[in-house]
Length: 150
Length: 366
Image (cartoon, rainbow over all chains, first blue to last red; front, side, top):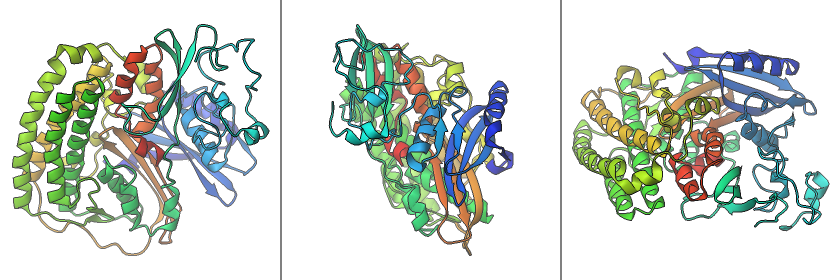
């Protein structure tokens, strides 16, 4: 049996994404990958899920300014794909957890102890009162000003 | 660095990598520690991102095989083959029997070479240098066989769209199998040390335990998944000559570092046995079909690399250069599970845990 014979591709609209992903999760499907393509109308986003050796792909067509909801609340592993997809293609994805703020590829942010990596981790870590006043939220303006390890 | 804005009271954040003695390739973690216990790990990739996926837009689809092979220096052949299979799916090309069996031969050869390399690196990581040298000495024979049959020790260069570019003689393949029998004998000897030596067991047993449910849910693949008790091997799906071969899938249930090592050691033995069977049953005839025209459509292919399932996607529009190529590598899929395993472990075990997923950062960065 060849691979493509057990692969289904289903076109869905953005507002049905979470509902469909939820039902796949309940049916025992696991995430295989997420990939984006640039198209003339914006982007195409493909979410592939595996159940046994079968594969199912959900395909979304989104405009350049349209947002896609994150599926990380259903599949934690999606965070790596979604952050990379936003970083490399510019796809707007809402509420990724954890959120690398357009920096999973690490081109803008100084290395270790980067403040952008504080957010969205699985452990709540209160900032001590005597800590230097480093803003915890990353913003394009703050990123632009950042040139060295704080 | 206690008191850093990243750390809370009683917590310390330390950087691990990108340059570290146990990491052959650059990968960075911010490890949050409570005493010696890891309570959080945040990975950072991107140090060697090369944009190889995007390069497909600028290369002829037949030439891009050589780029795909260079995604990784360890599973180079399978990257090239995965790309070729995706193009062949689109163009509805049927690779001749001998081409399919030769590809399978090199796939298994690559699995043996990769696992032996990993065993050596793992031994080096926990300070067993003799074992490292002995393992890599055995691996050298495998590389010699690769050179003799394909022409390259690291980048094979033998896979092309439509089949293979090299066609080793049957006598050469028979001689290679005899050479590989030495590797099998050596692997059995090394396995006894790896599995039975108390110092090795002390570092690997009950360390970095990944449960069956979590391994599946987090998308782990390959030996990482099979060591947690999930019987899943893409070769069983059937591609190249695998539907005509019978082989065992190695599964362990304890989910710790030792289980991951055992899966790989047993896979070496099974792959060496398969190599003998492949050569014994190697069909004759041509190894490739001519490729005419240009691909139009999309192809999805999944193969079982040494580190696990890899996915290849190609979309082409009828021109010589495809629109999009995507490879989801096994290490990328294993990162969430690796982070899960690290949390709760001791700092001293972090290098061992990272190595037992057999990370390939070149693959991950593409």
